[in-house]
Amino acid sequence: MKKTHLITGITGMVGSHLLDYLFDNTNDDIIGICRWRSPLSNISKYLTIQNKPESRIKLEYADLNDMSSLLMTIKKHKPDYIYHLAAQSYPQTSFLAPIDTLQTNILGTANLLEVIKSCISENYNPKIHVCSSSEVFGRIPKERIPIVEDELFHPASPYAISKAGTDLLGRYYGEAYHMKTVTTRMFTHTGPRRGDVFAESSFAKQIALIENNIIEPIIKVGNLNSLRTFADVRDAVRAYYMLLNSNTECGSYYNIGGNFTCTVGEMLQKLISLSSKKEEITIEVETSRLRPIDADLQIPDTTKFKNLTKWEPEFTFEETMTDLLNYWRERVNSPENKLVR
View 1 (cartoon, rainbow, N blue to C red):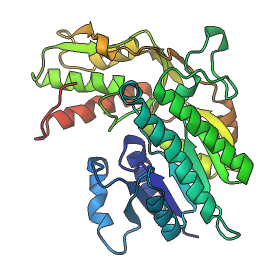
View 2: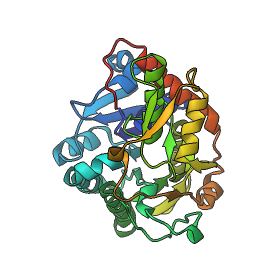
View 3: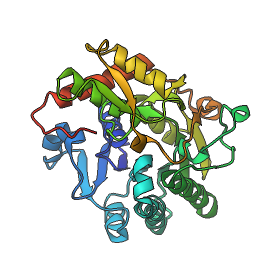
């Protein structure tokens, strides 16, 4: 039987890749929530399809901070699966805009869950994916690595604090109201369409700009010693789909992450090694890129999730870095104006 999937934040990196996955691997209807001002470049190839009356892709303008728009969308489509991916997702930005981050990520999530709760009936009870973040764990002592699901939260940024609230809301609504919520803590995931405010994407963009002689061969960096476990965004969205199609308890929560761990500096060296100008590139620390506090040991234990779904990453670290760099090469070679950052 044909199902309906709703994605909040469909125009973002993860949301657009989830759209790709659902479009290519199901025959289901896909509803995307976006704000009227959201850039549509990540989903541009679907816009012609979406314009057709018979299209199984529909966009709805709504905002997490406006309950009436959320209520209208949920009532209209009654989605079977809801992937809540929309957020103010940039940790560095959260230090500059903490109130907006908390408002959008905590109260916005509460708005969505309250709306869904009000629509639940004997004939309607959707499965809901609440996207938290590995950042909730924050600063973890080395002896408690890898990080298990029940590790204490020690968030190290306003973004991480907001995701701790998101995480707890997902679990609360599942346990208190028997809503079919499942919360994920996805560890570092990246790939094509990653925003240039994130370290690996900023590095890839700078390399592409250097290769096109737009900037000097100097890559500006922050903390290169932070340890990360990397996954590909295309593996991440497949994991989310598998999770919502698994037998989960209301309010359950899972760590998800890749198999490859290295420092941010080692990740940068991999990107540089893929460049035609690798012999010319130098590295320079820029203090504005350093966080006041850094979550520097982000290594997950994903046993619980893998035992449930049998999911394993399919993309290698090198493939992910290559595709990310090629994405920025294509962007830099396009006619659009280039913001250097």
